[in-house]
Length: 183
Picture 1 (cartoon, rainbow, N blue to C red):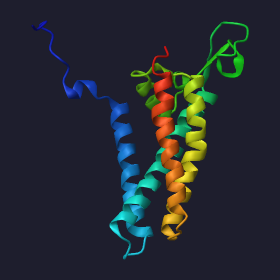
Picture 2 (picture 1 turned 90 degrees about the vertical axis):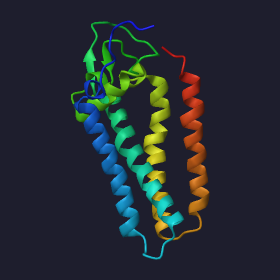
Picture 3 (picture 1 turned 30 degrees about the horizontal axis):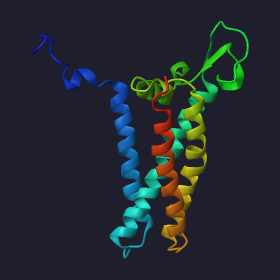
């Protein structure tokens, strides 16, 4: 049974923010590939190149994307006209609303676009911030350090890869599942 309304074409759905986001993502992927090609010795195995490139990519994603979300959440705001305090609002201050929805930066546009699918990412949701602070500020630098351990052929890299992988699974799956019903 059809309603007579045509679905929008792909070109009608994709906007400038989507194109820029995909280009930025692709540039990070290309950067990680090129760093694996140029910073590892020519005799490095394909497994070593993949692991090095993956951890460089992971670090770039965490540091550039997730830290930009934190920046938008903490430093972009607008007055609300409300007064008082609340423990469920960022900084406890009802007079200001924080988040990407109030940012004019390029990353603010990215997070507002993402916020169309999940509104927690458009404003400074405390649950998301609790997840993204350690991910961006610890996970990103840890991934970068792991890539450096791989480059130096340090056997301790395996332990830290396991630590990061468990943290990624915990944060990516279990923390988001616990928040998935939140409005």
